Image (cartoon, rainbow, N blue to C red; front, side):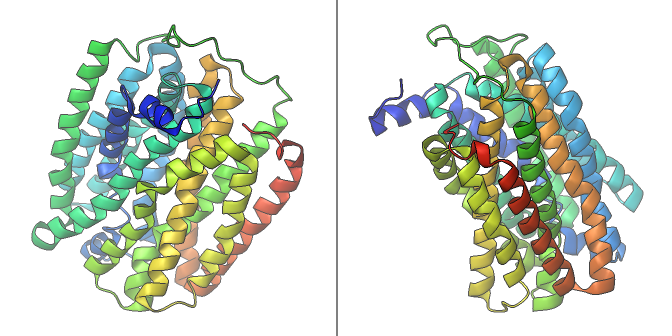
Amino acid sequence: MESHNPQSTWRALLGGLLPLFVLAHCSHHLLTALTIPLSPMIRSDFSLDYTYAGWVISAFNLSYGIGQLPGGWLADRIGPRLMITLGICGVAVAGFFVGLSHSFGMMIVFLALMGVMGGGYHPAAPPMISSLVEPTHRGRALGLHMIGGGASFFLSPLVATAIAAYWGWRGSFIGLAVPTMAFGIFFHLLLKKRGGGGPQEKAPRHRAPERVPAPRGLRPLIIFIFMSTFTAAVLFTVMSFIPLFLVDNIGYSKETAGAFFAIIYSAGLWVSPIGGYLSDRFGSIPVILIVLLLTGPVIFLLNFVTSWLGIAILLLALGVIIYVRMPVSELYILSRTPEGKRSAILGVYFFSSMEGGGILTPVMGYMIDHLGFFASYSLAASIITLTTLICGLLLRGEWQLKR
């Protein structure tokens, strides 16, 4: 039964390993967050057009998406601890070699390796977190976990652009690989000592066996995953070119554009627990429909705003959308999937989102090369809105469900 005492609820959430999972999520993304904000510098270094700049981003994202499928499958079979470790330490090793790359081809290879090595973290971490808390607190726990990702995506561009101003974009990858590796080793040893994340890990004994809602067929789950991942993929293509948009359309310097990009992810420092709470309180479907219906107008307005304040507000709005969507989507999937299959289903979910973004990003770059930012961003906004409306109608039978 859910506690109605807010203090006891937050004590339950913040006790134990959950705060360390927040740090683990931050460490996982310290390097994966660098490619987009550093893209103006990478583009200048290799003299790339928008299409090839899109392929740089996709080199990581495509392999990152592919890595989710075996990562989820392995996490269900060998336990999440090893996959989480690979998702942190493996990313650190590959990111270090990205920093040592002095040819375009070598950089692409190690960006792809970084994606493959990182593919096991996201399918492994949420099920392990869900086993640490009561089901009624799960949305808030997943929201707190998202703070780690938001912190890294917010801080990494600021730190990376500061490092790059003195040692170039390669120095940013090398400099952030070291603390990532250090935390990955520490977290692995801690999980091993606590006995968590091993093969066939069971729910804690003090918790009653969890009941998964009676199945209503795969149709609602498939529609939900498609709606969440396809709109996320289209939004990712828009975000991938925002630093270049700020440089080429607004006239910002490369360093300023990279720092401004961090505004999007500042929302991850505070909004995810709110999104998780709203999902616990009102249900996943109403919350995600509202944020996705706001996405199209926010993207469209980017075409008209030129002041720094207007740009900051729209970028912050995009961040709110991202960091509400993620815990809400994970909660819906976890609450409708048997415990032994959760990592595998989450692997499909993350694969669909990341692979879609990886495929569509060069397409967006090609469109910007030939049609410009206005037409390309307007089309993306229209696609997201139309997809949300259609899928929302197909899911109308799920609107009243609280989980």
